[in-house]
Image 1 (cartoon, one colour):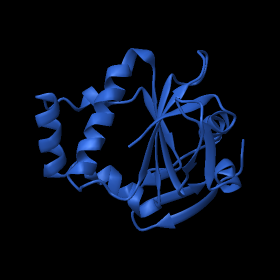
Image 2 (cartoon, rainbow, N blue to C red):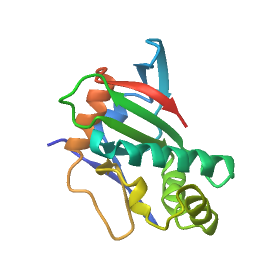
Image 3 (tube, one colour):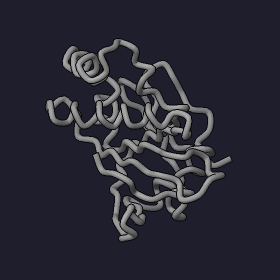
Image 4 (tube, rainbow, N blue to C red):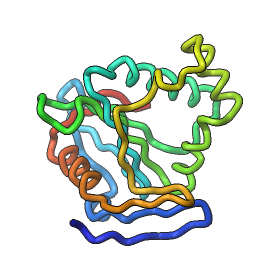
Length: 171
């Protein structure tokens, strides 16, 4: 179990990850086989999707692109990653990263009336399960919540750094 450092804010906590402390960017191959760098902020959320939920991933990407176009997306970087081979932790990962404050605003964005309107217009539904990931792991917790371990988070970051995933899309 890796040792955790915690930075407390009025609206939550940032857990400092061993793997995130090692680098501010990761170099990955993109779908064309070219090397590309992705920037890591202090706060990272990794949304894991299996092949079974591939449509949810596509829906979430469409939703986030529409939110960015509408100007309601906070200053976070969003990357879609796809596993190079089967047997990895997740078939696809949506990585959302930025400052602690930007990440907290990202979580709040989903409750904005504009976001709800975008969602209903895109999917003709109020069923937010249409964009849900199988699971997600991150290094931040909203006020009143906490994280027990960053082991699975660090493991997935290591796998990404080791080339188990390619960069499919920058949103």
